[in-house]
Image (cartoon, rainbow, N blue to C red; front, side):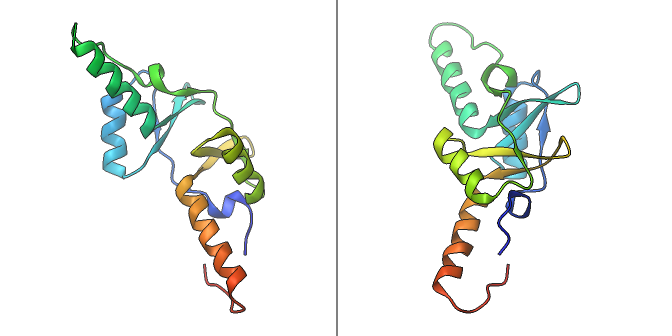
Amino acid sequence: MKHTTEFWMSKTVFKISPKEDVRSAQDLMRQEVIHHLLVYEDGQLVGLLSHLDLELAEQIKKKFKQTTPAPKITVSDVMTRNPLVIEARTPMKDALKQMQEKRFRSLPVIKGGQIVGILTETDVLKYALIASQCLESDEPIAI
C-alpha cells in the first residue's frame, strides 16, 4: 500500500481570487461538489477557503440584514490566510497527525514548490478504510 500524500490526495484543485464575492465561491463549490478552494493572487497561494468559511459569511450576512443592508463579503474576508502546505512525499501518518493536531480539514500539497493537489478529509477517510482492510485481510487489496 502506498503511504504518501501524493498517492491519496485529490489531484484536481479549484482556484479562486481573494477579490471574488463569496457567492461566486459558493456557486463553484456547489457546481464541482467540493468543500475547499485554493485562493490565488498574482499566481501565488494566499489562502484556503472551506465550506465552513462560507457558512461564517452567511451568518455575518444574516446578522447585518437585521439592521442594515448586508455588506459585500469577499473571499479574502473569510479565507484562511497563508495556509500550511505539505510536501507530496510526506508520509500519510505525518499528514494525518498535522491535520488532527491543528484541526485542519484539508492541506494543499506541493511538489517542487508547485501546488499539485489537496489532501482532504475524504482522502484521509479513504486511506483509513483501505489501511483497515489491509490489517484485517491476508489478501492483497486492489486500490
